[in-house]
Image (tube, rainbow over all chains, first blue to last red; front, side):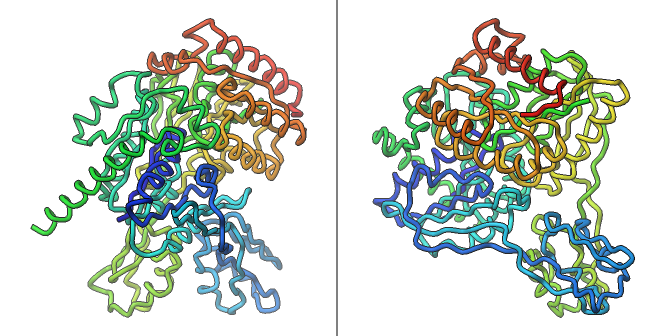
Length: 288
Length: 290
């Protein structure tokens, strides 16, 4: 089963939830945690894994053989990302804009374009106290995150419970990270910002046909609008975490709820059971 | 005209609350919400939309079933694994057109798609350019570029002194698009291990693109040891820490009221943000050498 933890708004507690859930479950289930927030991977700060393997992530970018090139400009015309400009006797490649689709080498009538690997990130694998851990890190200055996210997901082992820490937002990196999940936990806070971005995240999950439920973090500040919204939309609130300076302080030091306040393990186990019920119901109703 | 962009790396550190406050404090500025995926600045500024435009940028491949001979070449060639069983998954498709060029029977067309909207609005603090990327759409970087370009145009037309942008979290394409060519970046962090780790990465992005950066530590009293660590890390890199905002629920209460915190309270949070704007505006006027 694959459970992703997303939010829309940043800083609502995704990583705290993902790591606490993993540590609460590890004695019962085979658990893997995939940190797909490759722009700002933070789960390692909480799980402190020992990495045993690492591999670089590259995307293919064009390399032009100027001996063969006739400067016809077909490659620049075909490139949807404006990553190639053909001058009179010079071809310019804008490496950061290239998505590595390969269309330029395909359309080149002179076969002057080959593909060269361009390193954009790294994927590391390891273990943390019985939890298999995979994280991706985008190289600073590189703009395109999805290929690193794809590689993290492909490095997941088979079976067991897979927990995915998703980046904030609603665009391509989020879609890449949550795609294929059986369930998505949306972590939010009871403020107008939290609600606005939760609604966007819910729409995204509906577009992808992934069932979701909400964790309300920092409950106690703000207002009751998130609860009203969830009720109206029929989205279950699976867990409420209060605004508590002690939790914030533990978090600031990189300590999960499962370790810092072990009584929370039970809540996370109950959360997991609830998610399992929801996904099982969905499977059996799909069969009917 | 000078452009300030507020970034953070980590989400939820307080970018929007600070930009909303700068909106209330700065004279002669246009505001730009560059977080086009999950825009929130409008919730503090209650804009009235004056102009709404469609953002056409994406395109997806469509296979004509009648023409398709199911040869499978497109599936084999697609670098994004977007084609299975002779159907294109529009969410995985990046619109590159490889399949369109390669199809031997010309069964594939590239369909333009609308990937969002952008708006020019009036607020009680001045003009705001903001946008809304369609759900699960691509090209957030290009939409950010449109927002900045429009803001720049307004600033030139009205001879405004500042463009103040609320940036997205992370360090990827919309961040690069928000940052490149700006005069100054304010990086908002918090004294947590995550905040510190992410600050280092976003500082790296600022260096990479040659934009001078200043740091503000929000909720600095949550963990004063970490705050000292951030200060010494910044010092060793020659980066100034220009703001230390205390942890105070007044910020959340102002968000609930839908107003910038400086218009909601006269307390210590407001005082510190005012002090910070005085420094930033002076730096922007004097050529912003961080």
